[in-house]
Length: 389
Picture (cartoon, rainbow, N blue to C red):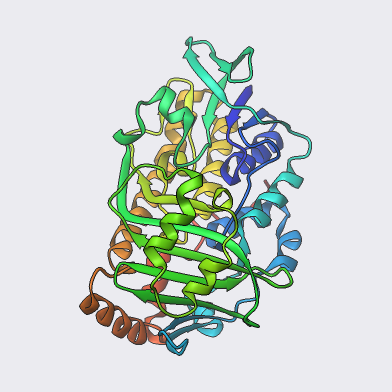
């Protein structure tokens, strides 16, 4: 069996690894010229950590653990009104936990698939399911046939658009935008991730683990669903956050060129089916939960693992796709629902909402509420105990 994977991010690379491990030939196309660019911090635990352990890459990831000892919810003077400590986080997760930069994980996955054909700077232009095979035209020219096509190309999936229809048909907007970029640490910041919130907007800063490096993250209420051109991103951030308190003006002053800023809507993907004919979707392409779920990476890696296992076990793509979706869909739906509820209070619209959020944070950041938070963020692995992979 020969499988084309469109997308060389976390889901696509994990799928490529497990297909190769299970005797199936993967080919990956990735539109970026040398792999994904940019990145932000992720909380890596539960199912994602379990899959990484089965791949044998945890030892490669561990030295790059983000140096964060607590998550502080601060006021304009920088004083913490509520704090999520490492000790409390251990009680919530009850298992291994690695805060990482997104690109650190992708780099480790790239190393793990060094024996897989990856075509950088390439994507698909057209797809024709001929029943006995799927024929793909590439944007760079040429046509090839594969047994199966898997779209692992994220929330704005080209595969999904070509095979299942326009993006808007499957998008659930959560009413927020997010942006991030690295800045130089001129604050002697320390080992803290800090969140400062005003009505309708939030700024966050945390250490990246690189000497003198911090990551600035911005969340703000927005009903616009369209993409912001790269040249306009910095201006939008300045107009939205320019008069905000805390160290926000300094973070904006240290921003890189507008073209280097990551910005996107906070969008979930909800679909009636994750497969059609010889084409299937995995990760954010079919079940994006958004970053507020803290489980997007884990579910992307879980889906890739389960899909590879199903393709090997079933042989037939129809039964394999049904098995994969049946195993994953309920888990993804539950986490999407949790993220949807959480997103409503993440960036309060009003001063009264902010007061309620602060009071709630002070209440829930206690050991007694660890089981509640564990259920919210799905801290345990969904995979059965490890056997011989």
